[in-house]
Length: 283
Image (tube, rainbow, N blue to C red; front, side, top):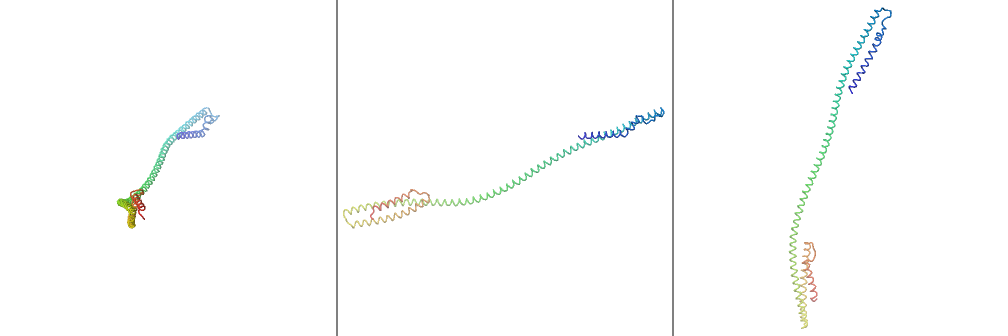
């Protein structure tokens, strides 16, 4: 495009130069060619010399004009060549500058993109570092809390172990007491059965003696003995009942179960024995 522009400019300059030359020399050359410069009343030889001179002058003018035109064309060609070379050089330089500009623009874009990526990565790194610090702080606090909780739990477990040991010892003691109370209740039941048998035997003997002899003094003596035996048996049974009740309460605290066990059966047997004594012994 630059070369076409320079060529068009050269053509315009050439046409302008031709027009200027034609305007300057057009009139004199036409006059010389038409022979208007020689007078009509001159001799023939002079007229021919004048015509020859006119033709030579016209030829010299044409040659001068051609030389000038050639000089102008040479100058124009030189100017055109220089302008074309300069335009081509400028075009190449412009293309190089354009390429450099594009490269610089691309590099600037790449640098900006890299800068943004670096800034984003730095921001991400800062956030991750803050998160890591926060996580480490929370983990440290959690670990401290867990250590304190574990220490407190160890104290609690130690206390619970002591309580369990105490409860085991107390359980063994209560079991021993319950077994002891069970043996005592069995002995009391046996004693009460013996007393009941003795009371029944004495009652039968007293009734038989009353029927056969009819002695009031013997009957009164028997009744006194029976009342004394009943009183002693009742006192013993009340004491045994109290011990059995305490043993039952201790057994319930230890096992947590209230139901029919050896203590309850012993207590029930003593109650039935008391009813039997009340029904058989005189009041």
